Length: 126
Image (cartoon, rainbow, N blue to C red):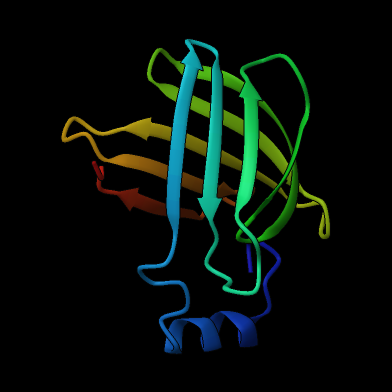
């Protein structure tokens, strides 16, 4: 509900284990402040989402699992990339955090305007 998704849609997705094991993220770091991300989304009918980020420079428009987002990016700390975003369809605010754990796992954390947090944790693949 915090992300603008209906109860029925959330319940059906949970029952079907929707997207479980499907989501993949590739990240290419071009420089300290420039990244290219490619993400396979949970919805199999959606294409891969591509995001070219120059931290702090431009407003971004991209598709994520909850739909189209408009966001700005900045470093929250030396190791946490933060996106302050708005869902285009609902105008609801959310925050995306991206970072590496001490075990080398990539984490994408989505936090709703109400504080509900969803974390995707990705193991590194060679």
